[in-house]
Length: 413
Ligand code: ADP
Image (tube, rainbow, N blue to C red; front, top):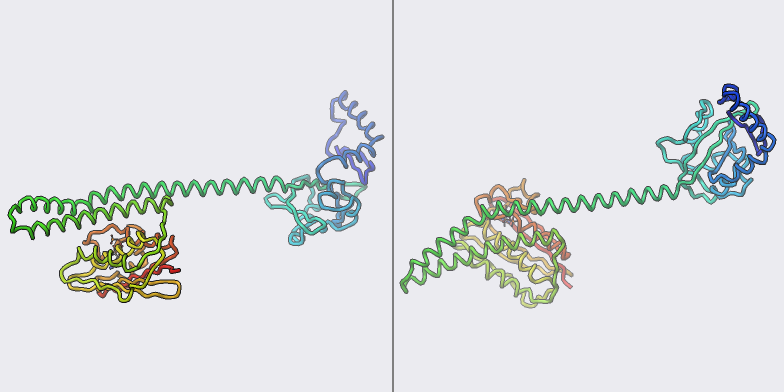
């Protein structure tokens, strides 16, 4: 059944959708009586209902002009109660949606049925002040004296949308935090697995070397064999240092991953660090290898994390030595520049194959031409992370069979 009304006045009571005469007689009679009562009072009852609902009600004719609105609709769109009557419906639609909307309304007028508006689309209303807001609308077609009208029941869903959007944002944030945590967990697990496989491969050779040297030292009992003893002691020291470096690298990764690195800045002479690094590297030079000190660095004072600079340069100089043949030179050069300082480690070694250069800072990556050398593929990755964290950077150029130049840049005050 449909009650047709307009402008607060009852026009017709029809049985378009509901035939009361098909109801059982007793119900039909009561129903009819109730309807008769409402018919008398309808003007008043309708006005009360129309104005007291919290949803906005907008009635539009076939020309898409606003025929009437209730107070809630006027307030929702920022108008005075009667300001909207006679205006095109477009007035309440944001500019960008008007064209599209007009088409939808015309279609709806042609095949009108009762339904929710904008299925699968976001709907927006335009306030008088030009701002727009999300709405939900139900469309109800009806006829008054042979003319078609559509009554839209409009709800402002700003709060619901904000709530949903906030909820979605929170879910997105939590999901990404969880993914990150899982990624970290995965990385740590991978690290443990790598460490175990490394222990079984990388530790075996130096450990058996240490054992051999220690056994031999035990056999050199005579005073004249002091030189031999010293040689084996140096071997032991180098191998222990090597193992210690691997462990330190692993701990570094763990700390970098979990964000637990605490950098300590201090002021120190650059020459102190360079001397320390070259002195250490000199202990494992190959036959005829030489490390050239940088020139004129005595006056250079820098403000950086000293331990990290030692770690970085040790990695670069050790690599240069490790990946260069006997009788070659490794040069360390310092180039002070405005607010920056470059330190380059230049070798005449095996170089890095062109096609593999892009992977060189990836963790665990080792080029195909070094697989017979000992190594973990961790050093450069750690070096790069530390430098990035400290506002520095690392670059390199290399030619296979000719040599490599690794250059770090650190900020200077
Ligand atoms: P590791 O030396 O333990 O393998 P690094 O992270 O220090 O690990 O280096 C990664 C890879 O980069 C090395 O395995 C090697 O392939 C390449 N590389 C680094 N430095 C040099 C160098 N000076 N000359 C040639 N190749 C180098």
